[in-house]
Length: 120
Image (cartoon, rainbow, N blue to C red; front, top):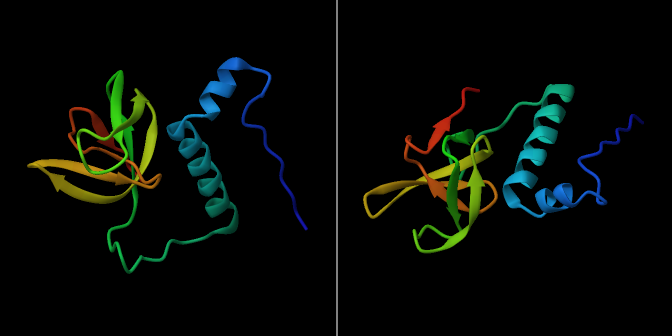
């Protein structure tokens, strides 16, 4: 049976340890693994019954940006940084402002001033 071993970082590196504790970093690593497996095995996504729109990727455009525990602008969970990529699994409107529901269970603004949708 084929096998694969990867290294994401070193636990004896303070910088790597800090990264590995942050949800956005973990999600980026997971997305990379998923993309690699999909490509290696020629897999295709089946549409979900609960969310007919396929997931898509967004990237943070600004220096730092809050993400939230729930769809409330007051429920700050952490800060994402420029260049970080997230998977969007849903869209909603909160007080006339649009938010994305992320694969991680968090929420982020959908304002194109702050995030951009990445091409597939």
